[in-house]
Amino acid sequence: YIVQLYPEMPVLAGMSVVLYLLLRKPRARWWDAPVLGVTLGLIHLCKPIYVLLPIAILFGSLVFDRRASNLRKQAVMLAAFGVTVLPYGLWSLKHHGRFMI
Image (cartoon, rainbow, N blue to C red; front, side, top):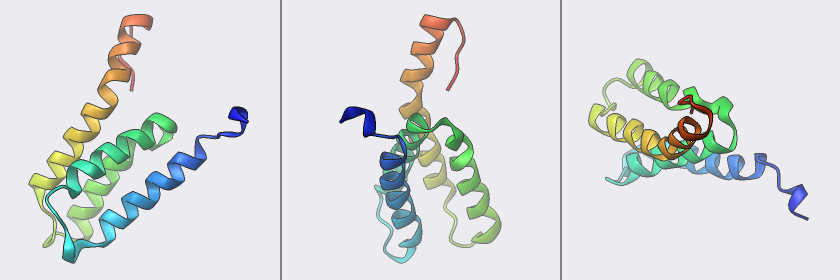
């Protein structure tokens, strides 16, 4: 049954976590940004088309919700995303000679 495990299933679960964390702003916690970054990184590792999703979230936060936007949390989110996808990029560099994420 392992051939029936498509990448859409973990991406759907990850998107649910992302939407939950983004939409509960009045009750935001300190760990929301790192969890959001790691979740976005795992989503990207499942389906690479979502590589620009953290940038889109940052841009949307700055444009549409400027007063509630916290640049420190956005930077932590991007750093956690980078740390999550970094091992795959380093593996790609070692085995293929190109750093790709």
